[in-house]
Length: 386
Image (cartoon, rainbow, N blue to C red; front, side):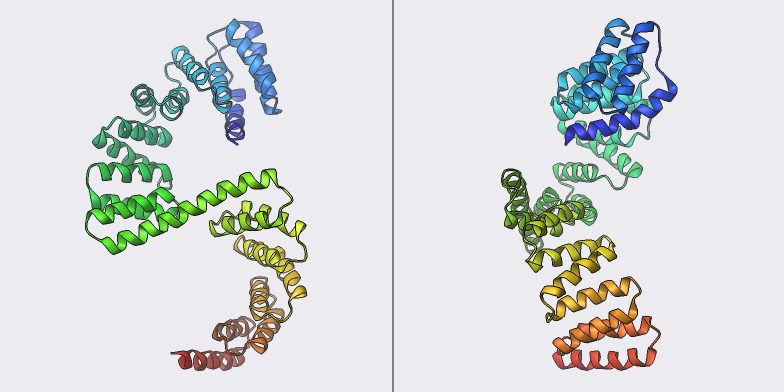
């Protein structure tokens, strides 16, 4: 997975590299450099690596070749080699911002050397004050060096540049905890959880901050949420490994898909649940879960197909009719939606939300008098339940 990530990064870089070109003093080195880049565009990483390594042997002044080699080594998890390649790129071209950043990232994240990482990342931000990733990693490096004030300054700046960075929010919150700035920590972790409701460590840290200011009940809620998410993460890890070795176990695929669904990992959930329905086509729960996933992704035609399969197996379940009606509503098929809501009400006449949904469908269909009539029935049922 990591190799794919860095392959993707390489391909992004290649367009610029091919357009700009690299310093070319040795003709064979220049040719090999081009061979390496073109091999990468075709996914031939071994060929690219061999060509680029030969190129820098012939001409050590090819800064771009060193840089691309560094990305290749990083993707292959050869971190010392990556650091060396990025270092060589910065020696050849001291203004190579991305090389300084990548050197700092490798030193910090993979080689656990925050002191050296600080030096590389400081150079990157001096050359580009708005390099959000460098600012974040510099803040993390300061944090690991126990320089909390410097960390907070960098991370606050990084968030101005990229207000969606989960890593930046988390480290900033952790720095506030170290400074015992409890309310600032709480505000930071709450913002992070708004962005990522499933950030396990953020819930734990938020609970810790609330406990330190004496809000025990609120702290307990956050810590309970942390425990639940931590258990789910363990289950996810276990199930992913299990299905790799037991690919024909339908129950494992279903359980994996349900957790991914709860985590709003829609693409992963789709793959897992599609595998499940292929293995257990007679089970309606797979179609129902897939219908929900497709609905959340606004794939309404696919959601319709899934809910129709559910109803074909279990035509007398009111909630399935209600779900299919909701899909028809999004497809602006109001007549079909009304028919499904009416069936849901016939199957379960005591459920108020079916009447509310039917009222909305009539309203959208332009049948205002009927919408008002059904809404009155909804109000009658809800007043009885109070």
